[in-house]
Image (cartoon, rainbow, N blue to C red; front, side, top):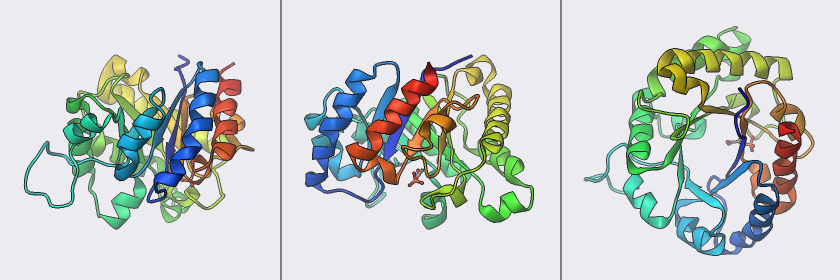
Length: 250
Ligand code: PEP
């Protein structure tokens, strides 16, 4: 089943107010390419200004807490994000799994909190280079999905991003054959976990998606979009990726 593709940008810890000028070109491209969904996830501080500057664009967050409120200094909850105008939340990005030691259980709680608040949760999974070299990539990702996917997730409320850790920010990507094999395995696991809804959950590929490889990666079976880091920071780089997604959808 071909799902409508989603191209989501993750700005990570990049951008101050001046960066929002990039949204003008991205929002225009999103409007011109209505066949795909487009989202940008800037730092928390830019979410409300981004919504104000580009009201037609889906703006998301890069994290949320697993609880709606409480004594968690420095954290941001999903209901708070909703108030800013956010529509999505990335959870379980490998940088947070590594830097903040987030566990699968915490990621699942964050995804559930996001969904409960009305956000789309983008749950990230992916193996390290050592795990791939050891032939463990599919087992690692299956285990992450077992632990991180909320049972209430649906094709509307949940997105999965497969991001091999060794491909993030490195300019390296898996072969299209390896991407196809992993996305097929993720699809099978989602169907096992979520039943019929598992067939409707979009599975994004992430890791060094660029203008010159986007169409090829996005044309792979069960690649329902892309999560893009570095190349989402400018309209000049991100718009061709949106166009690649449209071309791959044709
Ligand atoms: C990411 O961090 O989600 C990512 C995919 O980064 P990049 O596109 O820069 O590899």
